[in-house]
Image (cartoon, rainbow, N blue to C red; front, side):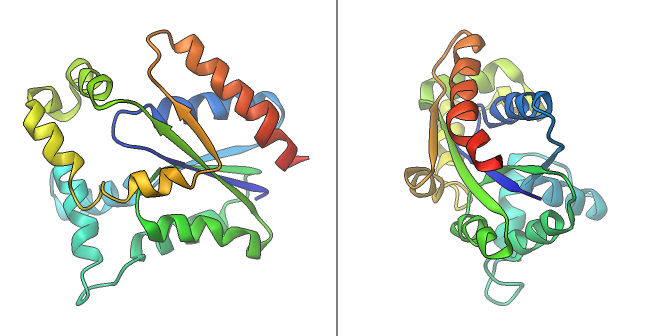
Length: 198
């Protein structure tokens, strides 16, 4: 692997949309690309245990894993790093960076001979709440604004702004027209990511 791209941002900021566009651009340029999400491991675990998916359970599980008398901070980051180190794609896109241990893991990749970059995707709470109401995934559209704000303060979300403040690239996704977001991503790809791969 030549490059790992970590994507950080609050829920519904557009991280998956950014990852989709980056994958498209990288593949167009002839690179092989793999996609990874921290939530993949969480969902696999919940499935194995017969526990329903959804934001509440996906926020609770890492807290249980990271408890001092369990597997300790960074357990999920270590699992994801193991997957990335075995990956033979040119570029790995990692969606869902949210813990300081995730950031630390990404910053350690150059010691392994792999470049890494963190992209912060953000949008206002109003814009993100409107997206939640519109998409209705796992029945989330029933959430009140108070529920939404409570989830924003969950332990799994509170480190996101600090990580975002140290990101290499920031994308503000307030766009109503997705073409404008795509232009921002294309610019970041052309000016920041392609030089890292050459």
